[in-house]
Amino acid sequence: MKAIGGYFELELARKNEYHREALKLNSGRAAFEYILRIRGYKKVYMPYYTCDTIFEPIQKLNLEHESYFIDAKMEPIFDFSMIRDDEALLYTNYFGLKDMFIRRMTENHPNIIIDNVPAFFSMPIQGYDCFYSPRKFIGVPDGGYLYPDRAVYKPIKLTRDISYKRSKHLLKRIDVSPEDGYKDFIDSNEDLCFVGPKRMSKLTETVLRSIDYTDVIKTRKRNFAFLHKSLERINELDFSDVDFETAVPIVYPLFLPNEDNLRAKLINEKIYVAQYWPNVLDWTNEDSREHTFTQKLIALPIDQRYVLSDMRRIVLALNKILEVK
Image (cartoon, rainbow, N blue to C red; front, side):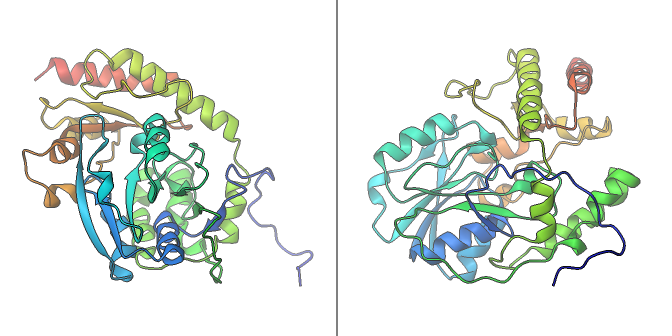
């Protein structure tokens, strides 16, 4: 029975979720596990260039897997004819910039699972399974969205997750500082390990309903465009297959393979840039493209917390660092 009266909860705007037609789960990896369960795949082809947490469902379900390399455009170096009916290939929508390639790939190849964790605003493709992790784009402790291929969808009964214990870092970042909340952020991430699929918590769902997604999209695209205009001449990443009109990226990926310690130097300027993904260094040889991407690709923040003056600060910091070698 709904309580009436008493103390107030945290008040948030009551709007609509961006992925309101999707299945609402507790994390991106849980959504991936859900896909594997309903599909009954025996083997999955996985990219070397990915986060190690995505392998949790593979381990839990004891599935066979094989890894593949990517080219300079971050597209699979792979013979798609190898994929059997009881197998699938997982492809990551790298940095939210690979929508055009994904559309072409899915026109010609079945049994593709699309990892849209870095591409929250990319739309699903009918007939293909894809999943999302909103906490990579929005300040929530957990959560996942899943668009399964409805032709094979068989719902799994799930309990609802509870999120308040994973939310301390979100509150500390506002009330104290990012540094004070960092350990809580790590603890929150670890608390999601091997949890398995659950329904999205009420807390996460409420926060996701409060967001002005139109503003988020506008801000991310504006910030990305500013950095790209400022850094395109030095960036060695191949952007030839990117639709800049529609893409809503997670970060601005800056690839300078001849620069050393650039990430550490930016962090020293209090520009916190995540590494995508440290585990790849253990999986690949030093001469591989994946190894180089992991070491040298810098993920510059462009999200909705920042205005153009913040982007100018990033560019100025880079100019200072690159001039003083």
